[in-house]
Image (cartoon, rainbow over all chains, first blue to last red; front, side, top):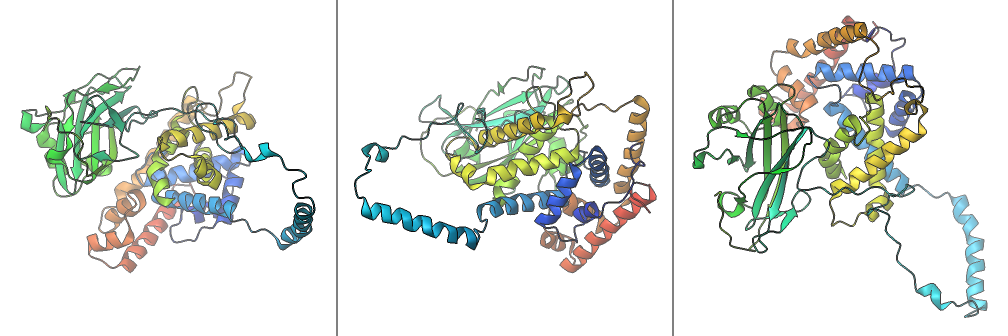
Length: 312
Length: 173
């Protein structure tokens, strides 16, 4: 049975989930080691954290803030700890004779072992696919387009479009979009039930409609084509940034729904407070399978082109 | 590092919980959480940071590290190397139908805790602090109470959660 086959309470787990308790690298190491030690320990861990998450209204796979903060703190501290491992005095002392001997060799035998080729160092060859991770086999390099997340069932993608080179798209999630350029939207969706997309942005508390665009007479979510192949589909109509945006961060929300959402419904949902995924879920009639995807894009000042655009 | 972690934590969480290619994601939160830390610790190592060129997409770079670490775990851990035809641990299927029903029933009971938190500031703090990661100062300001009161409320909510779990036999009495 799911909850009742537990034998002993694990104090560490209680401490881990208690926001008022301190949590150290040693605690975390002990917890992780224990949770990976046996099926029983893993089950105990799972039941406890799943219960914690469900009580907060989260899904089983979504850790709470307490868990996330703990994991972040420990990941950073442990990786920093690996960098700053203290070298013991014994080791330093042991290196002194070796250093002295090496220095003596250099002084006594100048030029004897000189090898011209030693100064001509070849660059380290990159790993297959682009990157290697230390101690690992070459890791694969998967290109991304805009902000689409390959693992989500439905996701929006955003790319910048240079107005200087009209067809030149560029990535905007890890660098800035430019104010005098255009923003291009796309989506990827694998669930055929999700046939509607509502796309809007928020910048400095200002609402920016994209799709639908009320100024163009559009009043509800646009129709999209979701299928199991989940290929990228570009939306028809770029947005010229310098008309409604300003430099700074814009948060874009893409809401994939089964039924259409009207502009009025969205205005009501956004009334009174800045939007968030939880707030939108609370205020819109969305089911569990319907997806809200949030993407943040930085916009920088820039004067590249002067293309006019179909969408203001 | 904190900013990088916060930015990319959702991406890595999706990879470890939903998988990629033929891998369907770790079923167990213990495995998911362990892998989250493994991936970020590897990403934050000095040599890994130096290996990133700063020009290409960091998402792809991090995704590569995550895929690699997961593959290493899958190949090392005997639990994931079943050759007898039995379901591998990544299968999101419970052992039998009766167990599924009991699990769902228990989960529904546990999830009712949230519905029982109605008064303020408890309700806002449960959502704001535990779910949305709102800072204590911001919560105090928004709710018009002191930060001390916010902390007291957080501690009280945690105690109520523990009590609820004990009452429903998830925790020992």
